[in-house]
Image (cartoon, rainbow, N blue to C red; front, side, top):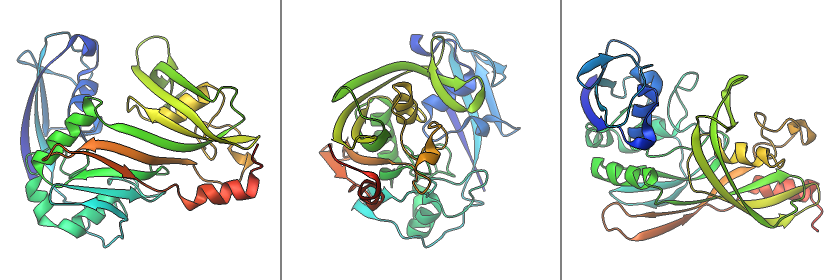
Length: 311
């Protein structure tokens, strides 16, 4: 089943120079750049048909005509979810490490979306019929597969719009807990840089001098164990792999990070020590400020007990 959608945007000064597929992916929550490929997608800049590689200029009018697949290949699965909060408008869960948020290449089952398809069925599909990429119903932000913790999910189209807007407008407070290599010289600090793709490995990201997108994190050391430290990291922007890139940039990569920590084999039995610990957001209907906390997972305590000497 396919659902047709039309989007119309005007390019701002901050967005000029972006490829049009990157521009659209940044404007439409949950829309992947790969979804813009094929005969079911048409892009127009100032009324003229465009290729996804075309660059946009300030005040350009960008229109997207897009046919989305609706759950055609998503199998409802009875997967247990750790519920932190649930009402008719939103669901908040503590995502388990190793669980993928939505289906994609190599992950067509066992995802959060498979669990949502089972839990809510056609009701959620119908509610999200006017939203973007319906293969990701309710998803307003994501966590990497190996990152655990707080994940917010919309249960109505209206809630999706309002929650997504808060993420886009940076109104959501997000604090992660991480265990990083080394003993920090300073108890707290701020990391700001532009982030872009690593030219030597397009699957990775790194600080860049030209291009890229702004990023900002603040860290605070919670516990010191000599060879490693436990830190809280608040992110003000939501770039892919942001914390992992930022901590590597100050020579304190996240332990268990096989992508950004070249010494990940130092602790061969460890997994990624990164957890979405606290998230504050306004309720999409009442406007009430809500705080959700996912307890620090057992893998953190087990790692500290095995390798740590508190100083």
